[in-house]
Image 1: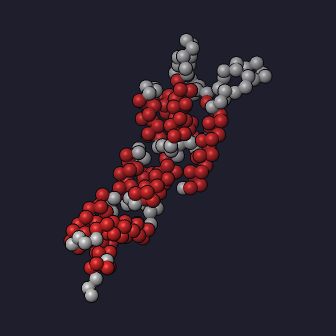
Image 2: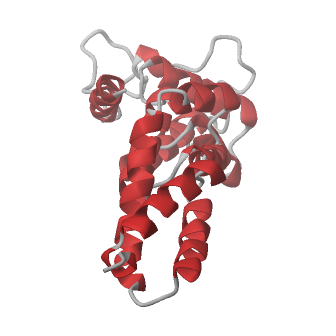
Length: 215
């Protein structure tokens, strides 16, 4: 996943460089012609949309919107599609631009999903169920989400749950064991941990807490 993400970022830098205005050609071609990779699809009825009256070309506008969004943070294809729709970009223009961005590696939902999962695990300690919700919210399709979530190590997830419980337990000194268990269970449930795993980790942590050890 890391290699795919690095490749996507490298492609992004190359695409940004390609957006600069080209130098006037020496062959007599019009200076305003875009690089071949960004020419409208031949035969597309929208190919010359709003260019006759000096208005911005729809493909160029859509491309700049997508590049600006990606420059701020990685995004899924669906998030970018939604942004283009809010900017009243025609669907066929949006799909053509998104297809091209996918071809050059700027849009890569598999790499995006992996990055999102890693960041949410490290920053918030989320488990598979909560991570699935995050991916769905970000517009990652079910197949890509499942492939990403299937790579999670169950033992690593259990270790994260134990770390979360140990940290929370330190702030609950003096409470009755039952109260501690209830609050810890609620915390792990909100982070997407299954009940069976959560209760096993909680029982171990509470039983091992120095305040609950018998003299």
